[in-house]
Image 1 (cartoon, rainbow, N blue to C red):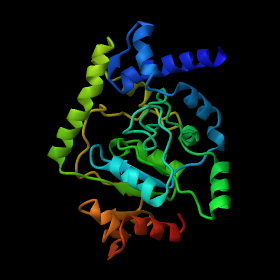
Image 2: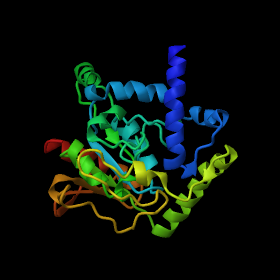
Image 3: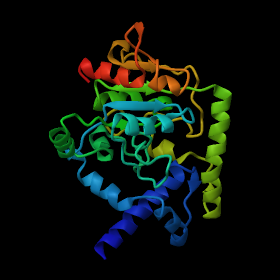
Image 4: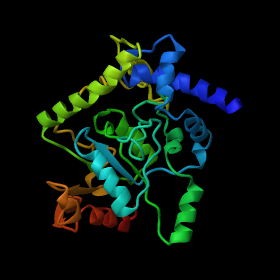
Length: 284
Protein backbone atom coordinates (compact mmCIF):
# COMPACT_ATOMS: atom_id res chain seq x y z
CA UNK A 1 0.00 0.00 0.00
CA UNK A 2 2.83 2.39 0.84
CA UNK A 3 4.55 1.71 -2.48
CA UNK A 4 1.28 2.23 -4.33
CA UNK A 5 0.74 5.58 -2.61
CA UNK A 6 4.32 6.63 -3.28
CA UNK A 7 3.98 5.67 -6.93
CA UNK A 8 0.74 7.62 -7.23
CA UNK A 9 2.11 10.71 -5.48
CA UNK A 10 5.41 10.89 -7.36
CA UNK A 11 3.68 9.93 -10.61
CA UNK A 12 1.01 12.63 -10.39
CA UNK A 13 3.57 15.34 -9.56
CA UNK A 14 5.81 14.20 -12.40
CA UNK A 15 2.89 13.96 -14.84
CA UNK A 16 1.65 17.47 -14.07
CA UNK A 17 5.11 18.91 -14.63
CA UNK A 18 5.56 16.85 -17.81
CA UNK A 19 2.33 18.21 -19.26
CA UNK A 20 3.80 21.72 -19.21
CA UNK A 21 7.44 20.90 -19.96
CA UNK A 22 7.16 18.10 -22.52
CA UNK A 23 3.78 18.68 -24.14
CA UNK A 24 3.44 22.46 -23.54
CA UNK A 25 -0.09 21.83 -22.25
CA UNK A 26 -1.97 22.69 -19.10
CA UNK A 27 -2.45 19.52 -17.02
CA UNK A 28 -6.02 18.24 -16.76
CA UNK A 29 -7.84 18.53 -13.45
CA UNK A 30 -9.12 14.95 -13.43
CA UNK A 31 -6.89 12.27 -11.92
CA UNK A 32 -8.27 9.78 -14.44
CA UNK A 33 -6.69 11.80 -17.25
CA UNK A 34 -3.34 11.89 -15.46
CA UNK A 35 -3.54 8.13 -14.91
CA UNK A 36 -2.74 7.51 -18.57
CA UNK A 37 0.57 9.34 -18.08
CA UNK A 38 1.43 7.03 -15.19
CA UNK A 39 1.44 4.15 -17.66
CA UNK A 40 4.32 5.69 -19.62
CA UNK A 41 6.43 6.95 -16.70
CA UNK A 42 8.50 5.27 -13.97
CA UNK A 43 7.73 7.15 -10.72
CA UNK A 44 9.06 4.56 -8.25
CA UNK A 45 12.34 4.20 -10.10
CA UNK A 46 12.65 7.99 -10.25
CA UNK A 47 12.23 8.17 -6.46
CA UNK A 48 14.75 5.37 -5.87
CA UNK A 49 17.33 6.95 -8.14
CA UNK A 50 16.91 10.35 -6.49
CA UNK A 51 17.68 8.73 -3.13
CA UNK A 52 20.76 6.92 -4.48
CA UNK A 53 22.13 9.63 -6.79
CA UNK A 54 25.20 10.24 -4.61
CA UNK A 55 26.30 6.62 -5.11
CA UNK A 56 26.06 6.65 -8.89
CA UNK A 57 28.45 7.40 -11.71
CA UNK A 58 28.43 9.91 -14.58
CA UNK A 59 28.74 9.32 -18.35
CA UNK A 60 31.96 9.14 -20.33
CA UNK A 61 30.37 9.85 -23.71
CA UNK A 62 27.71 12.39 -24.70
CA UNK A 63 25.67 12.23 -27.89
CA UNK A 64 24.64 15.87 -27.90
CA UNK A 65 22.16 15.76 -30.79
CA UNK A 66 20.71 17.02 -32.92
CA UNK A 67 17.09 15.74 -32.79
CA UNK A 68 16.10 13.47 -35.71
CA UNK A 69 19.69 13.17 -36.89
CA UNK A 70 20.36 9.50 -36.13
CA UNK A 71 21.14 9.76 -32.44
CA UNK A 72 18.85 6.83 -31.56
CA UNK A 73 20.57 4.59 -34.10
CA UNK A 74 23.97 5.67 -32.84
CA UNK A 75 22.98 4.99 -29.23
CA UNK A 76 21.83 1.51 -30.19
CA UNK A 77 25.20 0.88 -31.85
CA UNK A 78 27.07 2.03 -28.75
CA UNK A 79 25.17 -0.55 -26.72
CA UNK A 80 25.32 -3.45 -29.18
CA UNK A 81 28.71 -2.91 -30.83
CA UNK A 82 30.79 -1.35 -28.05
CA UNK A 83 29.00 -2.75 -25.00
CA UNK A 84 28.30 0.64 -23.43
CA UNK A 85 25.59 1.31 -20.88
CA UNK A 86 22.92 3.92 -21.57
CA UNK A 87 21.06 6.12 -19.09
CA UNK A 88 17.82 5.66 -17.23
CA UNK A 89 14.90 7.56 -18.70
CA UNK A 90 11.70 8.45 -16.83
CA UNK A 91 9.64 7.64 -19.93
CA UNK A 92 8.49 4.22 -21.11
CA UNK A 93 9.19 4.77 -24.80
CA UNK A 94 11.25 2.72 -27.28
CA UNK A 95 13.03 5.80 -28.67
CA UNK A 96 14.18 6.94 -25.21
CA UNK A 97 14.87 3.71 -23.30
CA UNK A 98 18.56 3.41 -22.37
CA UNK A 99 19.32 6.39 -24.60
CA UNK A 100 18.53 9.77 -23.03
CA UNK A 101 17.92 10.87 -19.47
CA UNK A 102 16.31 14.28 -20.24
CA UNK A 103 17.84 15.49 -16.97
CA UNK A 104 19.42 18.73 -18.19
CA UNK A 105 16.29 19.30 -20.28
CA UNK A 106 14.36 19.80 -17.03
CA UNK A 107 12.03 16.82 -17.06
CA UNK A 108 12.69 16.09 -13.35
CA UNK A 109 10.55 18.93 -12.01
CA UNK A 110 12.90 21.44 -13.59
CA UNK A 111 15.86 20.44 -11.43
CA UNK A 112 19.14 20.48 -13.38
CA UNK A 113 21.64 20.58 -10.49
CA UNK A 114 24.78 18.61 -11.43
CA UNK A 115 24.81 16.92 -8.00
CA UNK A 116 21.68 14.92 -8.88
CA UNK A 117 22.59 14.17 -12.50
CA UNK A 118 24.13 10.74 -11.61
CA UNK A 119 20.61 9.48 -10.76
CA UNK A 120 20.26 8.45 -14.42
CA UNK A 121 23.36 6.23 -14.47
CA UNK A 122 24.62 2.97 -12.90
CA UNK A 123 25.80 2.62 -9.35
CA UNK A 124 29.54 3.01 -8.91
CA UNK A 125 29.71 -0.39 -7.27
CA UNK A 126 28.18 -1.92 -10.40
CA UNK A 127 30.96 -0.45 -12.54
CA UNK A 128 33.51 -1.84 -10.10
CA UNK A 129 31.91 -5.30 -10.26
CA UNK A 130 31.79 -5.15 -14.06
CA UNK A 131 35.52 -4.44 -14.22
CA UNK A 132 36.32 -7.12 -11.66
CA UNK A 133 34.19 -9.83 -13.30
CA UNK A 134 34.81 -9.02 -16.96
CA UNK A 135 38.23 -7.49 -16.80
CA UNK A 136 37.32 -4.29 -18.61
CA UNK A 137 35.80 -0.96 -17.80
CA UNK A 138 32.10 -0.32 -18.30
CA UNK A 139 31.73 2.83 -20.39
CA UNK A 140 28.56 4.86 -19.91
CA UNK A 141 26.94 7.25 -22.37
CA UNK A 142 24.21 9.88 -22.43
CA UNK A 143 22.28 10.45 -25.66
CA UNK A 144 19.94 13.37 -24.97
CA UNK A 145 19.50 14.99 -28.38
CA UNK A 146 18.33 18.33 -27.00
CA UNK A 147 21.56 19.24 -25.19
CA UNK A 148 23.16 20.75 -28.30
CA UNK A 149 20.47 23.44 -28.49
CA UNK A 150 20.21 24.08 -24.74
CA UNK A 151 22.23 27.22 -23.89
CA UNK A 152 22.90 26.19 -20.29
CA UNK A 153 23.84 22.55 -21.03
CA UNK A 154 27.58 23.09 -21.85
CA UNK A 155 28.33 24.60 -18.44
CA UNK A 156 26.44 21.84 -16.63
CA UNK A 157 27.95 19.01 -18.69
CA UNK A 158 31.44 20.42 -18.15
CA UNK A 159 30.80 20.60 -14.40
CA UNK A 160 29.83 16.93 -14.30
CA UNK A 161 32.33 15.50 -16.80
CA UNK A 162 35.46 17.65 -17.22
CA UNK A 163 36.93 15.38 -19.96
CA UNK A 164 34.06 13.92 -21.99
CA UNK A 165 33.83 12.38 -25.44
CA UNK A 166 31.36 14.55 -27.36
CA UNK A 167 29.48 13.24 -30.40
CA UNK A 168 27.33 15.48 -32.61
CA UNK A 169 25.06 14.16 -35.36
CA UNK A 170 23.78 16.59 -37.98
CA UNK A 171 21.42 16.28 -40.93
CA UNK A 172 20.22 18.37 -43.84
CA UNK A 173 18.21 21.06 -41.98
CA UNK A 174 14.97 20.95 -44.00
CA UNK A 175 14.70 17.16 -43.72
CA UNK A 176 15.56 17.33 -40.03
CA UNK A 177 12.87 19.89 -39.23
CA UNK A 178 10.27 18.05 -41.28
CA UNK A 179 11.04 14.80 -39.48
CA UNK A 180 10.94 16.56 -36.12
CA UNK A 181 7.58 18.15 -36.87
CA UNK A 182 6.09 14.76 -37.75
CA UNK A 183 7.49 13.21 -34.57
CA UNK A 184 6.03 15.93 -32.32
CA UNK A 185 2.50 15.61 -33.69
CA UNK A 186 1.86 12.27 -31.98
CA UNK A 187 2.39 13.41 -28.33
CA UNK A 188 0.40 16.59 -28.98
CA UNK A 189 -2.54 14.57 -30.30
CA UNK A 190 -2.30 12.19 -27.34
CA UNK A 191 -2.37 15.16 -24.97
CA UNK A 192 -5.48 16.51 -26.67
CA UNK A 193 -7.23 13.17 -26.20
CA UNK A 194 -6.32 13.27 -22.50
CA UNK A 195 -8.05 16.60 -22.13
CA UNK A 196 -4.92 18.75 -21.82
CA UNK A 197 -5.41 22.36 -22.88
CA UNK A 198 -2.90 24.23 -24.99
CA UNK A 199 -0.65 26.50 -22.98
CA UNK A 200 0.25 29.91 -24.36
CA UNK A 201 3.33 30.12 -22.14
CA UNK A 202 6.06 27.52 -22.16
CA UNK A 203 6.00 26.07 -18.65
CA UNK A 204 9.68 25.16 -18.82
CA UNK A 205 10.78 28.80 -18.78
CA UNK A 206 9.70 29.26 -15.19
CA UNK A 207 10.97 25.94 -13.85
CA UNK A 208 13.66 24.62 -16.16
CA UNK A 209 15.22 27.99 -16.82
CA UNK A 210 16.79 28.08 -13.34
CA UNK A 211 19.95 26.05 -13.00
CA UNK A 212 19.67 26.05 -9.18
CA UNK A 213 23.42 25.68 -8.88
CA UNK A 214 24.27 29.30 -8.18
CA UNK A 215 24.21 30.50 -11.75
CA UNK A 216 20.89 32.33 -11.62
CA UNK A 217 18.34 32.29 -14.39
CA UNK A 218 19.21 30.89 -17.80
CA UNK A 219 16.54 31.77 -20.37
CA UNK A 220 15.39 28.77 -22.35
CA UNK A 221 14.10 28.79 -25.92
CA UNK A 222 10.78 27.04 -26.68
CA UNK A 223 11.15 23.26 -26.71
CA UNK A 224 10.02 23.00 -30.33
CA UNK A 225 12.60 25.47 -31.71
CA UNK A 226 15.03 23.63 -34.01
CA UNK A 227 18.73 24.16 -33.49
CA UNK A 228 20.72 26.09 -36.05
CA UNK A 229 22.58 23.69 -38.36
CA UNK A 230 25.85 25.56 -37.76
CA UNK A 231 25.72 25.09 -33.98
CA UNK A 232 29.21 24.81 -32.49
CA UNK A 233 30.47 23.44 -29.21
CA UNK A 234 31.39 26.26 -26.79
CA UNK A 235 35.17 26.60 -26.84
CA UNK A 236 35.31 27.81 -23.23
CA UNK A 237 33.83 24.61 -21.78
CA UNK A 238 35.13 22.20 -24.43
CA UNK A 239 38.43 23.17 -26.12
CA UNK A 240 39.04 21.24 -29.35
CA UNK A 241 42.00 19.39 -27.91
CA UNK A 242 39.84 17.85 -25.18
CA UNK A 243 37.24 16.18 -27.38
CA UNK A 244 37.43 13.32 -29.87
CA UNK A 245 35.29 13.96 -32.94
CA UNK A 246 34.18 11.18 -35.29
CA UNK A 247 33.19 12.37 -38.76
CA UNK A 248 31.20 10.22 -41.18
CA UNK A 249 28.80 10.67 -44.07
CA UNK A 250 26.77 7.52 -43.46
CA UNK A 251 26.25 4.76 -40.91
CA UNK A 252 28.60 2.50 -42.81
CA UNK A 253 31.43 4.87 -41.92
CA UNK A 254 30.90 4.09 -38.26
CA UNK A 255 32.06 0.54 -38.84
CA UNK A 256 34.44 1.13 -41.74
CA UNK A 257 36.70 4.01 -42.61
CA UNK A 258 35.19 6.74 -40.44
CA UNK A 259 37.44 9.72 -39.83
CA UNK A 260 38.28 10.56 -36.26
CA UNK A 261 40.26 13.55 -35.16
CA UNK A 262 41.60 15.01 -31.97
CA UNK A 263 42.61 18.64 -31.99
CA UNK A 264 43.28 20.49 -35.24
CA UNK A 265 44.77 17.58 -37.20
CA UNK A 266 42.80 14.77 -38.85
CA UNK A 267 43.76 11.22 -39.69
CA UNK A 268 41.86 8.12 -40.89
CA UNK A 269 40.84 5.59 -38.27
CA UNK A 270 38.62 2.52 -38.10
CA UNK A 271 35.40 4.37 -37.35
CA UNK A 272 33.66 5.51 -34.20
CA UNK A 273 35.06 2.74 -32.03
CA UNK A 274 38.56 3.93 -32.83
CA UNK A 275 37.64 7.48 -31.88
CA UNK A 276 36.49 6.32 -28.45
CA UNK A 277 39.54 4.08 -28.04
CA UNK A 278 41.79 6.99 -29.00
CA UNK A 279 40.08 9.23 -26.41
CA UNK A 280 40.31 6.53 -23.74
CA UNK A 281 44.03 6.16 -24.41
CA UNK A 282 44.66 9.80 -23.50
CA UNK A 283 42.84 9.65 -20.20
CA UNK A 284 39.06 9.44 -20.69
